[in-house]
Structure formats: structure tokens, C-alpha cells
Length: 194
Image 1 (cartoon, rainbow, N blue to C red):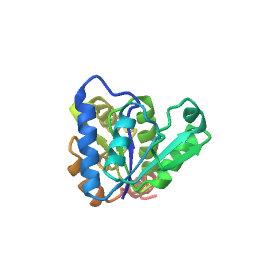
Image 2 (tube, rainbow, N blue to C red):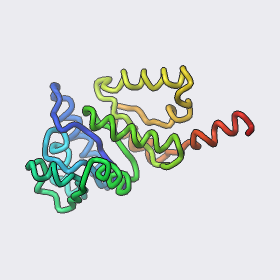
Image 3 (cartoon, rainbow, N blue to C red):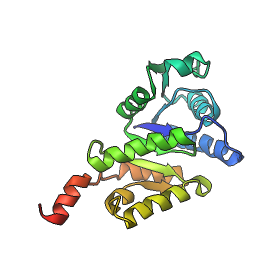
């Protein structure tokens, strides 16, 4: 299984992020997974990719030419794909991946996983996604999504399809057992009998 890991190009303030990232890679190695990520050597992206290489996990880095020119590219990668811009990067990562994990990160991580969630809602994707909710990192975002359901801006089926855990084994098993929800349009049509 090719798993996209969206994560920070910073380390975060707490060592728990780095330490858990290493444990996540150890588990994915045990399950013979490959990792798809943003191609950088910075922050948690570098921690995850370098440890995966040490564990002989295939790693696919997707990076823009601009970021690579700023010496952010992880030169240790043999599978590096250079693209023109962030939109192309996200599309290539989605194409290469069977499942998606949002590990703690910033705006880029949020943008990447949000695009996958939107694709699931409108029926463009049937691939599973997860929030690695380490230290309650995604609690506020999950509250926002629950409020979107409560206020009628998101369907419960789509919120419920997101795997949320601080345990990589739970996330991986969720990927294995995943059943994609119907698209927003299929669900609404069934509800209104249109």
C-alpha cells in the first residue's frame, strides 16, 4: 500500500512528534508499505523520509522545482518527482497514493488533506484518509468539522469516513477495512428521493 503522509516541514515544539513519526515509519515498514510525501528534507518530512530509507521502505518524494532549487529536496531519495507547482504536487501525490495520513503539520498539511476530503465528498476519490491525532493535535479541526455537520454544511457520512487516531495500527487497520461513503450528491438524492 502506498501511503501519503502529509506533515510539517518543521519539527514542532514537542519531541513527541518526531518520536511518534519514527514509530509510525517502523509500523509501516512492518506492513510493507511505501511512503509518498512532499520530497523535502526539512522538519518532520525529513525525519519520516530518512527513517523510511533506513528501514528500506520505498519512498516517493514529490517536490516542486522551486523548492528543490532552494536546497530543500531530500537528496537521499532515489524516487523523486519534480513538478511545476503545488497544485501539480498534490495531484501527483494523490495519484501515487492508496491512502492518506495527516500527521501534525501546518497550513500545507491542512490544504493537502482538505483537498482529499473534498474529493471524497464529491465522489472523485474513494481512497481513505486519516488524521493522526497525536496529543489531540486535530481536536479543534475535528470540532470545526462536527460543527459543519451540525450546521448542515457537511454530511455525517463524510465526517464518519475519516479515520481518527493517535495509533498507527488503528489507522492502518482502518485503511484495510475502509468502505468509501457515497458522494454528497448520491446521499442527498437518496434523502430527497429526487
